[in-house]
Amino acid sequence: NDIFERATETVDFLRNRLPTKLGKPKIAIVCGSGLSGLAATINEGSAEWFDYSDVPNFPQSTVAGHEGKLLFGTMGQRQIPVVLLVGRAHFYEGYNMDVVTFATRVCKLLGVEKMIVTNAAGGLNSSYAVGDIVCLNDHINLAGLAGWHPLRGPNPEDFGTRFPPLSDAYDLSLRQLAHRSWQDLRRQVPSRRKLHEGVYAFVSGPSYETRAECRLLRQMGADLVGMSTVPEIIVARHSGMQVLAFSLVTNNAVLEPVPRGDDPKLQGMSPEQLSEYLSRGKANHAEVLEAGKQAALDMQGLVLLIVSQL
Ligand SMILES: Nc1nc2ncn(CCNC(CO)CO)c2c(=O)[nH]1
Figure 1 (cartoon, protein in one colour):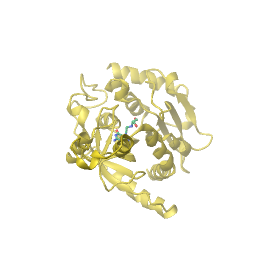
Figure 2 (figure 1 turned 30 degrees about the vertical axis):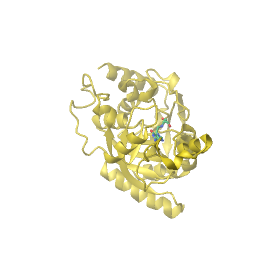
Figure 3 (figure 1 turned 60 degrees about the vertical axis):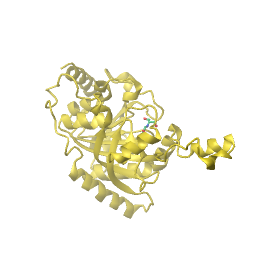
Figure 4 (figure 1 turned 90 degrees about the vertical axis):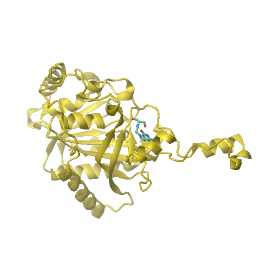
């Protein structure tokens, strides 16, 4: 109940500071690394900002590309009330799972019925290109399978059942809408960027995966790997919200085996040549943020089209 009480306190704080004309947000949008540009989709004049640091019980984001702001406003011509979470708390920052998923519970108590979650992720599926967008249709909760699960501990009965099913976690009707909206967007604005569907593997981070771990994840059936989203999805489904999730492929994870020390082909290489050879595909956060910036307009266009059809 402690979580329920804290979330209620946070919602009361926000409600007391929001104009009544805004109406209760039915849709929440979580902006992942480098995807804060989604805030631009809010109708002029309707925006109400809160810094996470000013909101009771809200964790602070400590990661570049995660501003740490709550944005209430309306979207599209029908002026649909929405709430945007610009930046998120990650498990790898040292937050416990109940803190990582606190914003999700606040959304539920605010009246949100549908959550659209975006993130940046590494591509394990070789048919993906950097910059492509993937609509998630399932996940592998690696950290959860090892015990780091957002619902571990006493069940907050006010939110949902003790043993929630997740075999249909990623809402099919919302995914169908996502593909239709993508086709509409492509008719309006041609682009080489593709929309795929795939499985996201949640790892704790903060290190990026080794080559052997990427091969393991791929062999397990994962198309993407990342360090967020899955805890929020589980808590959103636990509390009865529908979810739609998109990953922006910000780099292709390295699946090739580590070069061998006894490989004759490498014997003649200089240290610089060896370093260059090893650096191919090495993930780094700067490229994650850059890819987010490049894809921002398409991600905004897609989300805006989807929200306007909800
Ligand atoms: N190989 C790989 N590539 C990735 N690109 C983005 N992310 C998601 C993690 N994002 C972190 C660090 O960029 C910031 O939250 C990953 C990842 O976890 N693994």
